Length: 168
Image (cartoon, rainbow, N blue to C red; front, top):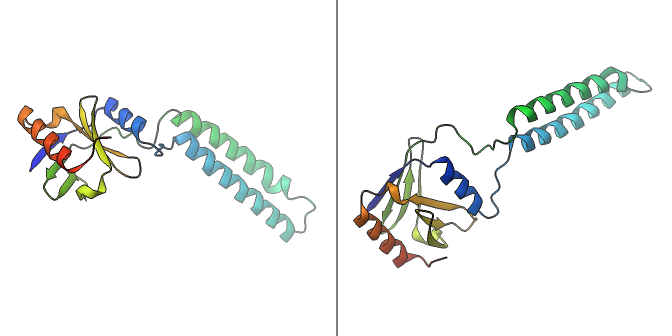
């Protein structure tokens, strides 16, 4: 059993996002735009229902303009506030320990533990100072070489992974 204990740096997090195929982080701006579009649709639908209930020729003056003004203002404020950040950017990423064993791989931090059998991975590669294990959904489990105790553990980890997974 070999352990790798580390905390991902910002550069490693960006590298993970770059190599993860089909897994695109949602920006706060995209989230705000989606919520705003749904809110506007619901607000306008409610304005039409209120207008029909009150038998008004046009419900727009009662609920439409104020709802639209608040929604647009909220959108621009939130978009400006969170622009450029992603929901995957956390200020404090907990220290993580990944353990390689004969029966599989376990990743654990202070909040959770995830366990994979070796067959859960498509393959592996060594890139940018890390051993990278590829998952079928396009994500990667990145094991920075600096997280291993010594060179002997790194060599043993390479051998264990290479014996079980094809290089990709």
